[in-house]
Image (cartoon, rainbow, N blue to C red; front, side):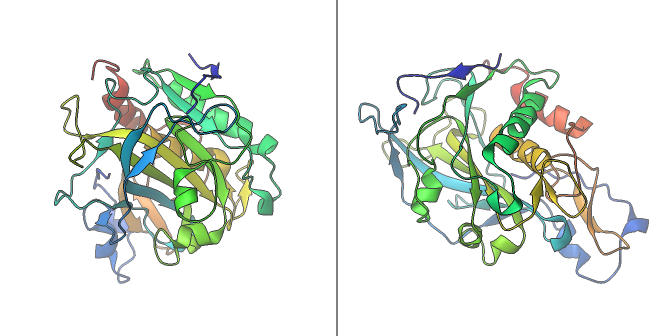
Length: 322
C-alpha cells in the first residue's frame, strides 16, 4: 500500500532478439545495434561513499553510517538520436552479466517495502513545467508498477525535505543533500553538463538515467546476502535531462514525462533493458518487442507490456522471500 512516510531518519541488460528483418534498413552498422545486450564498462572510477541518513530537516544523521559504492548507470535515449540506451558498469569484476537487486535482509531503511522520494527543487523548467505539473505524473507512473500483477510489493513515499537531493549530483558538482533519503530517489531535472559527465556528449541523447549504489563489506567487496546471484543494492537515484522538451501530454516531438518515469522506475525496481534494437526503413531506431523497458524512447507508453509485467513479477512475485 502506498503511503507518505515522515520518519525520524529519512534518510543490466537481458535481450530478446526477435526483430523483423523486412523492417531493417541495410547499411548503417546494424551490427552495432544487435551486438548482444547493451552493457559496457566505463573507465570512470568512483570512491566509496559513507552515506549518512538525512533527517526531515535535511541535516545529516551521524548515528548510522553505510559504506556503498556507485556501480552502474543505466540510461534511456531520445528517439531521434538513433543511440541505444546502455548500462555502464563502473566496477569491472570481469563479469558481463553483472547485475544488482534489492535484498530484503540488507536495507538502510530496515523496511521490506521500497521507499521513494520526489525532489521538488529541480523542475523541468526550460519546458515550462513546474513540479506541480510533473509530480502527479511521476506518482501515476509509480502506481503503475505498484499495481502490476503478481507483485505484492509496497511502494511508500518519503515526505519532502527542504533542499535538493542527490549523492551523484553532489559528486558531479551540482549540489544536493548527499545522503540516503529513500531507496529510489527521483532527483529531478538536471542541466546538460550533468549528462556529459556520464558519457561524452551524453546530454545530446540521454533522456533519463538511473544510478545504482551497492553495499560493500569491510574488505571492500560487493555483497550478496540473500544468495540470489545479484549484488545487493543500497539505493538508486534517477535524473532527467533538461535539454529536451518535456510534456505531460505526450505530444509528438516531445519527451513524455510519464513514459520516461515509468521506464526509469522500472530500473529503480531492478528491471533491465529489454528488446532487440534495429533500424526501420525510415531510419529510426525501433525495438522488437515494443515495451516500456526498451532502451530507447519511441513515443508514449504509459501501460506495461507483457514483457514488462513478466520481468517485474520475476523479481517481485515472491518478495520479501527472495
